[in-house]
Image 1 (tube, rainbow, N blue to C red):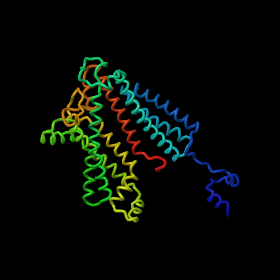
Image 2: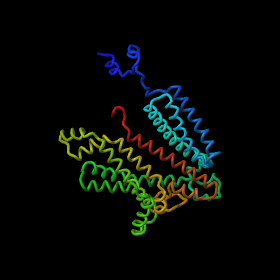
Image 3: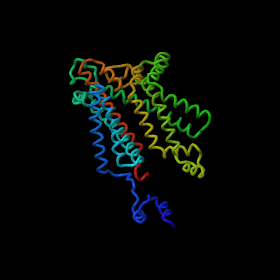
Image 4: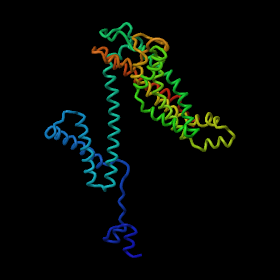
Length: 370
């Protein structure tokens, strides 16, 4: 083999043949953190903040903090790409820039969530520190009364009752529709899937108007927790059907084929093989549907009415929920009512997390089962 062939085989540039043949190939690191990477990030961040401050104060005066942040992030990515390009090849530059962009977006989302939770709890802390806030209703408290009087026990119970009724309606209907879509394909199944996907984008106020027009005006049903639960069910149902349909389609076909080979019928296979296999995913679908329904305000505003007292009967009389209570409290100009509103929002977030944890516990599997 000639020297030229050796050079072409090992992809070494021309020069001292013996030295170049022994030289190890430079490899690009795809993991780990180097000091140069940290210095590049810090330098790009400092330069971006300094350039942004110069731009918004001397060239393009901007008073918005959001605009300052957006400009700084853009300059940070550009400066970091410039610093990396001094030592790395274009492939490595694209890789590092993509990594920085992804991490920046993830950190932005996390920071936004932390800010929302912290701000809500901080504004509602004056009401949350009083035990009566969790065990009393607002029947004996007014806008001018101190925080030592009144609470949101009636809203907590109303939310639990309404979401329980909505889940009792949504879960059976949603699972049945998802099984139909996944197990009985055909033109009608495609039509149903199209309707479900269209309902996913349905505005919540439309669901409230539908229940208000059909059940309250046409059928004469009074505003109650049951009417609110029906409106919430309309919002939860498409989420439940779509998520359950996706989960059921992920069940391996070999499991169903094995059941059929053992002589099992289609519906017995669905009941004893498909549904138990996808239990964890179906629980996630229930969680997503609950998250959509438990925070709805517009349908409840039109269908449940508002009351300051406790009402545990969903079929008679107005029944307030936590989102509706937040809406009513924060409209008041009184600081005590605004504090109650933010405290109610904090209770709602805690209740959502608690329900999610409970659903995960029920739908999870032990090591022995796995």
